[in-house]
Length: 311
Image (cartoon, rainbow, N blue to C red):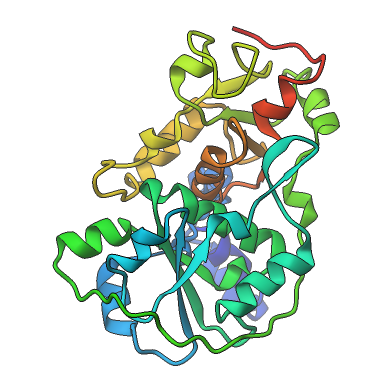
C-alpha cells in the first residue's frame, strides 16, 4: 500500500474505509518510510514522447548552450536556444551564481516560456550539465513543475536518427508569474552549521573523486579536500553513459543516494565547485523524491573562507 493510496482511503465513507483497511497487515506499513519517497516521473520525458508531442500547442523546447555552434549545427525542430551566460553571473568573485529574478524572468519569457506553457523540455551541452542548471533555475523561479528533461538528450535523439533542424525557430515571447523559491538555496552560514552536525542533512559533493579526497585541486580553488560531513558522489556516475547521457535506473540511483547518507527523513544538500555539477545531483535527488537544496556558492566560496576542509 502506497502513501497516496492510504491518503485516498481516508476520504472514503467509513464502511468503505474499514473494508479497505481490513485486508492490510501490519507488515504493509513497515516500508512506509520508503513509500514517502515517491519517484517524480514527470521530470523526465523520453525521445519517443517528445517526437510524438513535438507539435503540441504551448509546448516549449529549450536548448541550453555555452557554444552557439551546438545549436546552429543541428537542433530539435522548434527548439529555442538559451545561453548559459544568460542564466548565471559572477557575484563577489564567485562564478555561476543566480542573476536577479527580474533578469531570469526576462530570459525565459524571451525564450517563449509562459504560464500557459504545457511543458518545457530542456536539453543541451556537457552531458546534460547545462540542462540541469537551467532546471534548477526554473525551480528557483517556481516554474519547474511545468518542466521536464529529455532523457538521453539530443545525443539519444541523434543516435535514433530523428529529425533535426538548422533553422532558428520563431519565438512567441511569453509571460509567467514568478513564484520564487529562495529556500532551495543554502548559504555559506547555513552550510557552516550543517558541516558541524553529524545528524544533519545528507551533504553530497558532486565533484570528481580525486577532487573530493584532495588528490587534485578543483579549477581556480586553492584548497584541497571537501566540506566536513560531505560524501562524494561524482555526478557523471549517475549516468548510464557519457556518450548518451541517460539516467541510470531509479533503483540504481536510489542505492547511490542512500550510500551517500540520504534517507526519507533527511534532507539532501548538494554542492560542487561552482554549482554546476551539483545541479545534476540536485535534479536526481528531487527526481527520486527527496527534499533537496543546493549550496550554490559551493567549494569555490567555501575554500575562500576560513572554514575547515577535510581530505
